[in-house]
Amino acid sequence: MQEKGTISIHTENIFPIIKKFLYSDHEIFLRELVSNAVDATQKLKRLASIDEFKGELGDLKVKVSVDKEAKTITVSDRGVGMTAEEIKKYINQIAFSGATEFLEKYKDKGDEQQIIGHFGLGFYSAFMVAKKVEIVTLSHKEGSEAARWIGEGDTQFEIATAEKEDRGTDIILHIAEDSEEFLEEARLKTILDKYCRFLPIEVEFKEEVVNDPEPLWTKQPSELKDEDYLNFYKKLYPFAEDPLFWIHLNVDYPFNLTGILYFPRVKNEFEVQRNKIQLYSRQVFITDEVKDVVPEFLMLLHGVIDSPDIPLNVSRSFLQADSNVKKINSHITKKVADKLGELFKNDRKGFEEKFDNIGMFVKYGMVSEDKFYEKAKDFVLVKNTEGEFYTLDEYQDKVKPLQTDKNETVVMLYTDDQGLQDAYIQTAKKRSYDVLIMDGVLDSHFINMLESKLEKVSLKRVDSDTIDKLIDKDEKQDSVLSENERESLKTIFEQALEDKKPNLQLENLGSDEAPVSITLPEFMRRMQDMAKTGGGMGMMNMPNQYNVVVNVNHPLMGKIIRSKKEEKKTELARQAYDLALLSQNLLKGSDLTAFIGRSVDIASR
Ligand code: ADP
Ligand code: MG
Picture 1 (cartoon, protein in one colour):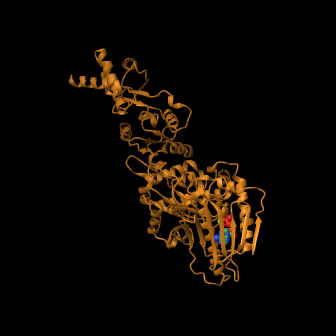
Picture 2 (picture 1 turned 60 degrees about the vertical axis):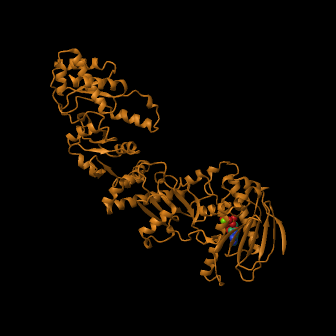
Picture 3 (picture 1 turned 60 degrees about the horizontal axis):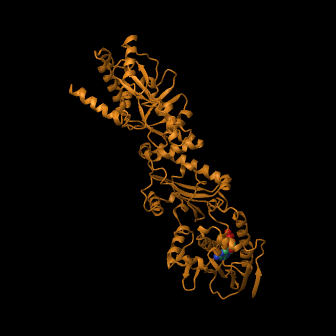
């Protein structure tokens, strides 16, 4: 038999398009051909298992070989093979229409980034690197004749009988001049490692099996030990520290999904860890850009996801709208929340120990997904300056008795810098108030979220006001000074701080509290924080809105008023102000120099 023909299509010269197309991704031809070989082998195994195929299976390895002299790459399998009729049907018609459809979709896009995975181009992706492709194949069906198909990158093909002893298919690529890089063994090995690493049939290259046909995620969780998960993690990320824990995903309804997600130790390193999840479809590597499949807040996780139900040959925007992807997304969210809840319930102590690392996921998830918030609100932890952890409910119960203000609002105090805000923390502690540590990258968002979700709760940074105003219980302290004395004290401070034009506030505070303190109202500070983290609104240029609070009841104020000399009054006032700045690390430059000079003076008198 010898036959020539024309592949029936309407798009003329589709091959130059295939060739130019996806320039940076030409390497996927190997994935397509090897996975076809794997498919053919699995089909044969299935036929054998239902007794449709009665011959010897024998060695079923898929073999990839390269001949540098002849400039060919060959992918061989011992799978089902094809008859000449089947070649015409599956290669000339079906595969071709698949490739045409694929190109129709993408030829105008021009944006490679738009395309996730490139399934669908299939067999014809061989023409991205080959000028001529031969298929030599012998069907598994009894009495079949071997066939050879030759295509040269145009719509003509040739099909003839051939000599082939062994069942299965050889795909022989005659590599084009501009693609000779693929004749390098090292390059081929790299491509195999990337795409074929976990293919379900053994793949041999240079007499070595290059894949693990039964990766961990395909096994039953009940058969696996912690050690297995840790070893698999090491395999995936040889340089990473051990993960904290993992989730084995295993769903078959309403979609198919398996995989293992690991929680790495991330601390506050937000960006470096992204794009570590690998997406597979039936053990064929597709991409490590899982942006639309995995919820944004879980992009920091590591591991693998395998699903044949994720449409791989469509554009990003379509993927986002795909209902399977949406379901997968919310399934993963739910699984992660359940796992965390379980850890919290079964091992509170262990959970607390891990919380510095997982806190960021949890908070990110709560801020960005309502469904996750609903589950996580029961196990998210807050930590106070004593290093104690509380759930939100526990913490509200703890601080309610002492930290409820006159409006029945529970005021939670927090610090984002224990070193810098120590004086304020100590003042709060004198009142037996509790102070939370909120120094994570996401904490300002977390705080906003808590306030919007929790009723009658407000969070205030410990230095945003004087302690009595932070938690205003409407208990007025009496003033030690008379009305006249207050007036003159105000004038003294106004003169002493003439160059600063401060927002002066005279308050009756406890005599044991700081004589002068600098506060930045919570509201103003949040505006500044938001501007800093890109919340926009051009707030960065806003003048600082610090308040200077003078504690009328501090003994120093009496001393200032009763001082005989004018200079002495101003000097003491200025000294008290500078000390307040100093405790906030706000005293800088010439003001700092002047302060030191003055302090030396005072000390040496
Ligand atoms: P897909 O794999 O998505 O079906 P391809 O274009 O990759 O599309 O392949 C088209 C068809 O050609 C396959 O469905 C299969 O029937 C046939 N085929 C390709 N490679 C082989 C092979 N190595 N052995 C047997 N059949 C093959
Ligand atoms: Mg295929």
